[in-house]
Structures are given as C-alpha cells and as structure tokens.
Image (cartoon, helix red, strand yellow):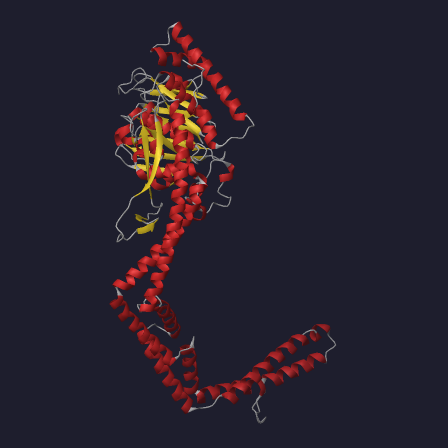
Length: 633
C-alpha cells in the first residue's frame, strides 16, 4: 500500500505530506485549492508524462515521493514468481529488486519523481536512479489511478476483453495459456512452411553448398586437435638427430653412458654414494636425511627410465615425415575454407548439418511440415473454442454483477452486458484459423472480440458503452466494474479522481458505500467533492488554499497545504461541502447526521462480511449491490 505521499513544488502545493490510511482515504477541498495536484503527483509517480508547466512558479523543480509498504510475502529474497509459467504479474517488490532498489530501514520502498522547470525529469527507486519505464512498472504494480479520463480505457475493445478475463480468473486463464502455447508452435510451423516454399530456390542453392562442404570435410575426416598433434610430430621427426643427442647427454648425466665406460660421475651414482655415507653415520640428524635422498633417487631413476624409452622410440623415419606433411596439407585445405583450425572446421560441419535440416525443400519435407501445421491448427482451434466458451459463461455473470452494482448508483434501470463474438476474415489471411466452421483471426488473446454494451434504461437498445454512457455514467460504470473485480484485482492501491462526477443525492451515498466496501480488500484513495462520499472515509484529508505567501512575500503565488481532519474538523468540512459554509447549525447537524449514518452503514456491512455463511462471488455481488432502506443524507 501507499503509506505516505509527499509533494513539493507542484502547482499550488509548495510542500505537503499525505499520510494515507490502509482503507479508504478521501481528499477534499474547495475548487482551485489543489486537489487535482494529488492525482497529478500520483500520475508522475507512475511514470506519466512530465509537464514543466506544473512546476510551481518560482521553484526550480517539482518532486513527488511515495513510500510504499508491501506485503512481506513479496520480499525480494523469496523465490520470485515465474511470470512466463503462470502468467501472473510480478509484484512491485520483485520488480524493484530486479532494478537494484534497496528497501528503507522500516522495510518500505521509496519511489520518487523529479521534474525540473526546464522540463527534464528524473526517477529514483529505493535510493537508486532508474529509467522512467522501471519506475512506471513498479508503481503500476502497486497502484492504479482511475478518473473520467482513465475510465476511457473501458472504450477500448482490448481493455474490455482484459476486464472480462480478470473477472473469469482461472476458468479463462488456463485454456488461454494452453491456446497461446499451441498458437506459438502453430505460427512457427506455418512461418517455416511459408519460408521454405517462397525461398525454395535460394535454400536449395545454400543446401548444395553446405552438402559440398560436408562432403569435402568427411573425405578428409579430421580429428579433434589433430593439427596440433601433427605439428609436434613433424617437428620431432625433422629434428630426430638433435633430439637423440640431447636425450643421450641427459641420460649420461643421470645414469652414465649405456656401455658404462664413462669416467665422469653420474647423478645416480653420486646420490647412491651420499646415501651410503649417511647410513653409516651415528648422528640421528644425518641419518634422518636418508629418506629424502631415497625419494630423490627414485625420481632420478624414473627420469632415466623415461629417457631410455624415448631414445628407443626415437627414429629418423623420412617416410613417416612425408605422410605427416601430406596430412597437414590436407588439413590446411580445410582450414583455409571453413575455420582457423581443425576444431573450428568440425564445429562448422556440425552447424551445417543442423542448418541443412531447415533447408530441406523436398516434397516429403514440405508435406511433413504442412501436416504438422494442420495438426497444430486443429489444436489451436480447440483451445480457442474452449476460451470462447469460458468467456461467454463469465460474460453472463459479469454483466449481471455490474448491473446489480449500477442499480444502486442512480442507474437502476440500466444494465450492462458483454457481447463475446468473433470477427470473420478471409481464409487467405496469414493469421486466419477455422473455428466451428468459420475463418477467424487467431490473435494472441484468442479469437474473441469483446464489447461492453450498456442499456441506459428499460426499452432502450443496448449500445456500446462509449455511445450509451455520459461522462458521469462512464465513471459509475467504471466504479461498478472495479467493485465487481475487487476480488480478482492484484493492484493493492486504487485511486479514484472525481469518480462521483455528475452524481448526487442517493446515488452519492451509494458511491460512498461501494468505495468503502472496496476498501475492505484494497487501499482506496478518492478525490471527491461530495460530502456523502467523504462521510465513509477512514481518513479525511483536506487541501486548504492558504492564500499568498507569508507576510512580506513578493512572489504573489498561492500556497495550499494538506491537513488530516479530526472528528470535529470533519463535521465542519462536510458542512461546507453540503451547504457551502460551515457556520450554520443546520449544516453542521446535517453533517453529523451524515457521518452517523455512514458509520452505522459501515458497521452493518462489516457484520455482513463477517457472517459465516459461504456464498458465491455472484451472490456476494448481488447482495452488496442491492438497495438498502437506510437513508444517509
């Protein structure tokens, strides 16, 4: 969760720190006080576009710093989840650990974004400078900002399909994962078949060249390291006389001439004489040296034996030398063409054999590849049909659940449904696939086109949400969707900016109730102008426009501050929001009544949530979405 947000030099906010509640935090304030700077700061923290015009006049830069507290189970020293294996998104802490970010002393993660007055931007994560994209990835995993502009993402078909898949959970995720794996193999086989057919002539020429090279190499049959062995042998054969003289001299020095006629003492004889002298001594110190001399004598004896063997094997063999030189010439013919040495030639041959398997354009090879592609296409079609069936089943439940939520948001006669269909294409399309007798586009997310339809009132036709919903209605649809998706949403912090736009009266109370319910499973931050919503807050922050700078300041820049309200201040603020002034007794009484009603409503909701009776997700949504008789404001 986002425990603390500090904003410096951003718009009218000179320096403000927001302590956020783990549940529902509301931010209120008069128009122009700077409430939107809170959302702007969160956008910057999420890697959003930096606008130098947002830097406070007279300041050199604007800084936004967030302190995130993340679950201990996400600690980076735990085994990170395998994103490719299960499709699950990486947690914020694992993403931060990948970027080399360090945690603070209290285990929190500090993220910061700085925008200078000249437009330059910097990002920091855990005390480390990181690319903007990395900061965005981490904060996207930790918080999501929703407003009327963000709600526009619901207008995109891909987002509507993603919303349905999130709601469906494993019932769609599992067949979709199988579909994607098989589709990858199918597209690979189709691409390879197409490549071989279109490049048959070039591939045939390349294959002939590779076969010629392999034939030449196999005729010579080089062995690993053979060229180095031949160099050593050729040198030995060419220098046989010099080598014999050298070895004989060394042997004579060690053990004397072979015929025993030498007059000079040899090493073995001298060492033997030394041992006899020591063995005849009564001094323990001298006698103790005998084992070491015995070891030296053994070593000299071994060396003399090896020299004797070397001399016996060393022969001047002109015929063998000729054979070695001829073999070297054959190997050099290969190394000139294929690699620097024999080992490289052998590696080239291995690579050529492997490459030849992909250059086979024979009728048999093409037929086998076509059969493989056809088999995989059938498997992909089967998985695609399973995904579509799961989506259609989930779409019915999703539409009913969102419609139930809209019932309490002043859209009681409205209903939502998700239409799951496919777009038929020509069979010649490269990505076309035949599913249930129709040729459709097999995209990475399946063959389905998902469209969110809204029926604004009874008897009206179902229209795409971008045609059937106003801006305020679109925000309420987004809120209803978020409440329904709460159990499946992995983002711990949800931020709503003016989600209650165009809402009033009873619908405003229902918005507050649903945000409070959403705060049971998520941290929720709401920027609002409605007292009915603010009454449900666990923590109430107000942005105050403090007027000009301190007395004597000459810059003429308005400064705003952020305060956390206690119970008394909340009553005053709600009265201002309700009546435009906090001075009237009627306004304060209305505010107190609103707070009491919200507290009672939340207590009843908590008791319902604690009830032991198990119910399904759909039943939970319908119960939570039902109207209540209790009035609050």
